[in-house]
Amino acid sequence: MSQSFLPHGYCYLWQPGLLWLHLISDSVITLSYYSIPIGLVWFVQKRRDVPFNWMFWLFAIFIAGCGTTHLMEIWTLWHPSYWLSGGIKVVTAASSIGTAIALVPLLPKAVALPTPTQLERANRELRAANKELESFGYSVSHDLRAPLRAIDGFSHVLLEDHSEALDAEARRLLATVRANTQRMSRLIDDLLAFSRLGRKELEMAPVDLTSLAQTVVEDLQKASGEHHARVSIAPLPPARGDRALLHLVLTNLIGNALKFARGRAEPRIEIGAQTEDRETVYYVRDNGVGFDMQYAHKLFGVFERLHRAEDFEGTGVGLALVKRIVQRHGGRVWAKGKVNEGATLYFTLRS
Image 1 (tube, rainbow, N blue to C red):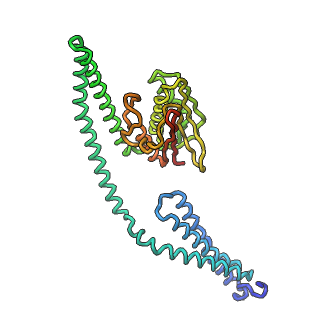
Image 2 (image 1 turned 60 degrees about the vertical axis):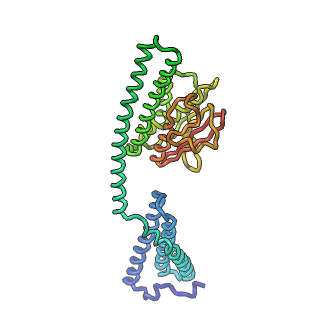
Image 3 (image 1 turned 30 degrees about the vertical axis):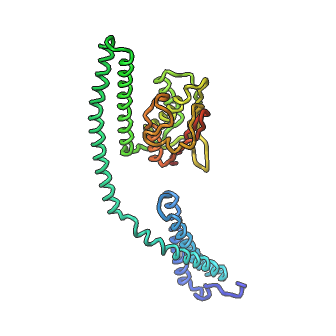
């Protein structure tokens, strides 16, 4: 049917100057239109956290359609494919109507987004609040440590120098006082470490997690003096992150695994990685005491413990630190377990 039509070149009387004018103009417009959706798609892929990112996809489709209509203007200079050209215009028109309709309810939400000035003011207020919190934390730390050292010190003196004058119950009570003051001191240290973590700048660099895990296992075994646990470390995909903070993540996860599996006749720890939905998932698995999954949401809270302090030492801050570090690396952390059948802690890091 298109054979009955004449190409646009006939309308321009095949004048070279006029043909080149339309050819160059439509070519530049086409390239410009196509470059815009490419930029929008790249932006959406890099910033998945941007609100209304689906709107960028609609704009990309609409603008790509506009570019294609100009491409057809070049084609029809020599080929009378007007039905194809009209069909592309219909598709472009439909996408433009859909984009316009979707844009209307988004405009009030976009206007309500904070301005750069508002964000800067909020950031200044947050920095001021953090400085006050840091000052308060140091003050509380100092004010609490002094009496704790005194209590621990005098209790130690009583046990060392006046042990003969004390009966067994008195010595037991003093030992309990010392144990609790030392535990309180560790709690203060961990709480301060947790509060400082949010202010530490990340020093991003490639990290060999296999080597890091091996170092952590060796350090933990030397510190505890326990070497009977069988620890297997599979080759771990390299990551990009703050090496010191990722060292802290592995120290807490592997340390917990060793701690909760040490009562087993044959404690086993497995450190590895797997791919799920094109995402690398690292894990630390043990055959220890495990936990009840109905309390899994409490695992990563500050001072949350699923086991008695009498059974397993710790302050309840380690996994909270792990969660904060992993989140600062753009990842997530979760756990699976079963009572008396062990537990597996998983975490991901942003690629």
